[in-house]
Amino acid sequence: MTAVAILGLGSSGAAAARLALAQGGSVYVSDLRTDAATSARAAQLRELGADVELGAHDLDRVADADTVVASPGIPPHAPVLRHLASRGRRWISEPEYAARFYRAPLIAVTGTNGKTTTTLLIAHLLNEGGVHVGVGGNVGGGLAPTASELAMLDPAPDWYVLEVSSFQLADIDRFTADIGVLTNLAPDHLDRYASLEAYYGDKARLFDNATERSRWVLGDQAEVRALAADHPGQRFTFGVGGSEGLAAFVRDGALMLRVGEVEERLITRDELPLLGGHNLANALAAALVARVVGVGLDDLRRGLRTARALPHRMEPVAERGGVVWVNDSKATNAAATVSALLSLDRPTVVLLGGKDKNEDLAPLAAAVRPPVRAAVCYGAAGGRIGDALERSTAVPLVRVGTFVDAVERGAELAQPGDLLLLSPACSSFDEFENYEARGRRFTELARGEAA
Image 1: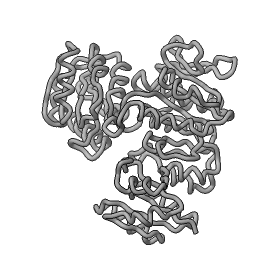
Image 2: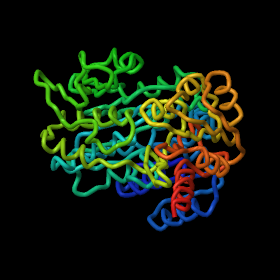
Image 3: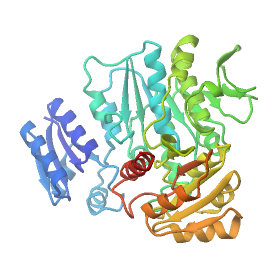
């Protein structure tokens, strides 16, 4: 009987344990946490036959397992992983483990920003084309199942569509995408990575097991092209800034494809229901993947016209006095907020702050310019963001303490026709459990005032 050790009892760890049990393995699960949610998951797994330990890891038992699956939340310098490394043992990520049991081709999506929207939009377009899809992975927020849950689907889908993070790619071994998508690259997670090169290096692992049959859908960015350059496979590039050499692009206000020799017109950008110019890139990437899979043009057009904003991703949540409140709480790094701001063409009051990730704020400061009407800085990172903006922009700047203070001040500053945009450029952990909780609070405030 194969012995599987699972480190971490979050949603992905619990799902990996259930998958290992379903495969007939002997399963040991451990987590240093002992909170109520973790204890409840532990009780469920014990009922299924797993041996679960909370508050400690049995290091020898972990090291002696045939397969070790580590949560992406466990940093490489954690004692349990250092012990494994000292014993010459490797560990793998949950998507790596899950994909070993997939029974259909795999589309894997990664990148710094846009990967969740692109992942779910790919699934939507494939479904419109009659393709049975299993979609999930690092999506989070309860929007889709984990990679291991997809492995247990019966019957198997026609295609799997999986979002994968850099933390998950760091610990792959045989993981192979039939179609791999790299949306874009920008600085992120520098509170965990020692350098930008290390972060990009984990993203590059998407290409580790490339073959001549691999197909790559790549954002039109020098850093993206460089990561893919030395790997085999067919490349399809997308971008909104031009059309030369691109397989998906925007021309005269229309989304276009060029797969092979023929150009194909999809829909106009005004027909795309997703707010923000950066969502054009996400739509182009998703449409390109769906076309490569074989979805017809009419199905693609219908799917794009029926696309809907995801929670916490440029999501219009209320309108009051002519001001549209937009929840972009998922913008947890400066690049995501820059992308949001540069994609808008109407006056905007933007809320910036949260927990600092120690990023370079110069690109963010450069993006805070008209049509931005004002910037409200708050939270643990508010001081540093405010200092960066004061040095670089003439846009009116307001500093406040808490998140609620920021929302209230932003609502006072916004005028009819404006957007009140929560796009914080930071994580939420100074005041909230996660970005979803922050976005929900913004939505509650928006709808409460509207009422």
